[in-house]
Image (tube, rainbow, N blue to C red):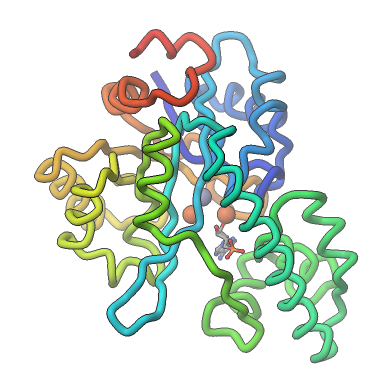
Length: 290
Ligand code: AMP
Ligand code: FE
Ligand code: FE
Ligand code: ZN
């Protein structure tokens, strides 16, 4: 069974519609795909409606969370959540808050760029995000469309990274709160790409163990940003802590170069996720795994 448990549609910062995404998943030979848009369940219904015969859909989301550090600042940590109840009041409230937070933060970034003479506009970015929670890749696409850069990746390197003068932080969900919220909504939580970017330095084995004790269910081991040594380390940690392990592409359409299904999860690990979830059912044949 070929399983990819982390993908993005244009319901967040990917470039495929949810319907295109499930079709591309089938064309790539996947049997199971999880739709995990950032801070929204907005793509679920369209993905389900377009699900090709024989394909299994795991409904999920990637929560933007923050880990509070001793100095008082927060480090960004992405938390994947699977099969949680989308009508859970805390989840609905947090997704609504993050939608507004992302909108205002995105517009502030655009305003800083416009003030510096960069030829993009608020209207352009809002047309690109088209109702999705605004993310930096939408601004990156505006920079590409205006000829400022030639790729979203270059936009990140030159204009959108955390150390850029145009960077504006957003107030993310506290990681501890998010782990508990997902559990309370019947979902299963998996720490995303913990060895990529800034989070890698602070997500020590000790800290991951603390979150395991709090109810974190798993960690993403195979991810395009993880080097072989990272994968070996995380697999060992998961064994020690009895955490679920996943492997996923983190596909974003043409915003990133990675292809859907390029990294995959083990069926036994998917069975553990399905087994543990109480929020909503799996859609499709792999639902029989539980
Ligand atoms: P935001 O959620 O607005 O803070 O933007 C972060 C998102 O940007 C991440 O979830 C990634 O999907 C995306 N991203 C980060 N770095 C890059 C990159 N170099 N190229 C394309 N997308 C990126
Ligand atoms: Fe993203
Ligand atoms: Fe992520
Ligand atoms: Zn992602």
